[in-house]
Length: 183
Image (tube, rainbow, N blue to C red; front, side):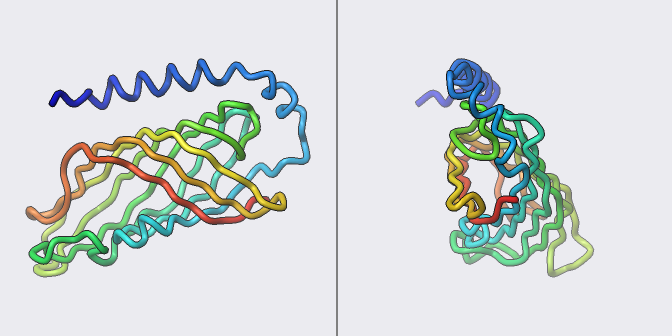
């Protein structure tokens, strides 16, 4: 089976975002000054997998937002192999979202994100490496009562999160789940 390259997939997602972004709702949403400009979110799925993420998102434009937050790997997670050594990862996550209907931070979106982290093997503690991943996802963010955030998305990612042979390297599915607040 032939797997599309991450570069081609990212290009296809970007084209889809541009095509879907020309919505009649975009102009109406852009004039809505009452919508929140920030969200603070946590991702319960990645926490279960051993990666703790918190994201502060800023909708700087009706169609665009950026987010930043810590990315921390503290425990093996639910899918870890028994022979994987424990390691700690401390890093930063940065993402850019395009909202198809110009109502950021709510609605359908395409996301490009990346994580860069310093990895350290727990035993021996002097074994370190740098790792990270890049992802392209499509998803949806809903705001309930104007403040409660529920978000989800699916896509593809390239992961190189490995130290001394322990961890993950390769192209994998990507998922995003988040709960949070908007303000």
